Length: 571
Ligand SMILES: Cc1cc2nc3c(=O)[nH]c(=O)nc-3n(C[C@H](O)[C@H](O)[C@H](O)COP(=O)(O)OP(=O)(O)OC[C@H]3O[C@@H](n4cnc5c(N)ncnc54)[C@H](O)[C@@H]3O)c2cc1C
Ligand code: SF4
Image (cartoon, rainbow, N blue to C red; front, side, top):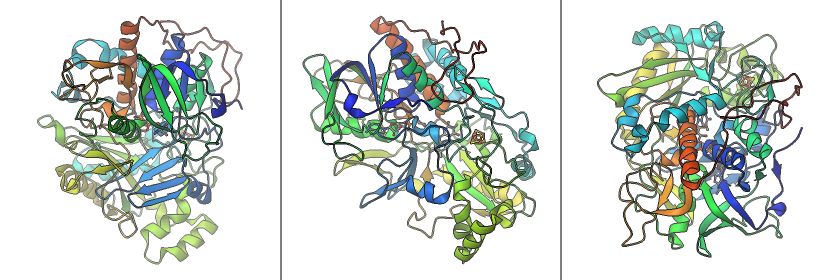
């Protein structure tokens, strides 16, 4: 199978545009800039995973785990699952070509309109007409779909039983999954989802519409050069209008003769909430004039994962993987159904609860986490695949998402980013959501387990997989780090408050000025599409963004870089 990435020693000295990071923001920017004819390099700190290479068993998963904290750094430096252990909160993000898309559940929801009506956003977001266009383009490329068999899955039925306790009924959740064989927006043939449930471990079927199967191959098809194991440390201005991007020589996989920097006329920072904020914090301490708001406004998006344990009726919420570890069990995609609890009076109280699936690679350690003396049971379970039949068949996983105050702050400590959010566990969202989840678990005849890892080094801190903010949007530099077009404000003393650094953008989850209250991937993609439309107008670029969906019959059978010979997209 053709890979997208090339080795770092082939990096040229200068590009028209350098994109740092390859999550939703970076992949959109790379595709659109490449389609506009720019010479583009994408620098990604993680490795490339092609379909079939995602961890299938616990030892493989352990090899892909990186755990870092204030005084701790263990595991693979470029491991796929990047866990930041914080004193106030833990954060999980993806590390690899495709960023979070490789390991997320793929739920794609548009926020309540009241989110964008909030004063936290610059007015143009709702007034210039491009927000809807951004969502339309994002939807055409990531293709959310509802499983036509969602209601058949036992985990959906378990959520239905549970949700009567709250007077609610679940609906099928839109997820970025191909439920039928298809040719996707990048012209790549994807097989149908096997409903193996392993989306959060990494899809080994090729049915999840990750960025590695959509925007990124599109960027490469239009000439972008993609480099992995390329960790950016900082950036600064050089030679007037050019930017110098400095690579981290201490990063794993870097060779002594690899380049140490690259220059570009335009830089898109898209290293995610933690990565982009960290790079800009370093750039600011190296002298680049950036808003005092940098690092402020971190939100965990009211995101919670919790469990119901002990239900007598099987829930079947542990993935079976691909190839399937047990025969005859279709658990469904990671999320099939959700309950939407809308508060019309008070947006912050609205809440969405999804039923989730744990990846099959975690199966052997579940008894260790949930049962006293579970180590012995865990050893037995891994021998007989007991977690699919015994009490763990009744394990229910809840993903909840709501709103918090976005009062966290990202700071640099000893050159590394840390989250500071004293008192975060007292945020009202946690009490509200835990009460709702406890009622749901009881409704399903299960005991509520808020945090099975409380007795480990993880402690009782909340955790999130939806970090947002740090480079939030604002009207001017006193209110934000970037403007509504994702251009970075220039905070040079005496400069006009809305002046920007020419050619410097941040396009990813870090630009959200508040919680979204829904899973963020669709909004990040939509705002990235919107930012690229503005960039094209401002810089006189022309790109076509229509999907390459016109299958002609010359169809590659496996996902990868091979494309159907469809007509090039036109808009
Ligand atoms: C387990 C899990 C489940 C999730 N489920 C959902 C879901 O169902 N729906 C949803 O909407 N969202 C979900 N999310 C969240 C979603 O995936 C993220 O919000 C999204 O990926 C963020 O996109 P981004 O563009 O901001 O950055 P990311 O996707 O985080 O990408 C940033 C990229 O930059 C790279 N990078 C970082 N630092 C550097 C550096 N210094 N140099 C070079 N590269 C760098 C990273 O390796 C990464 O590839 C989930 C996340 C996780 C972890
Ligand atoms: S359920 Fe399995 S096949 Fe379907 S998208 Fe998720 S990982 Fe891929």
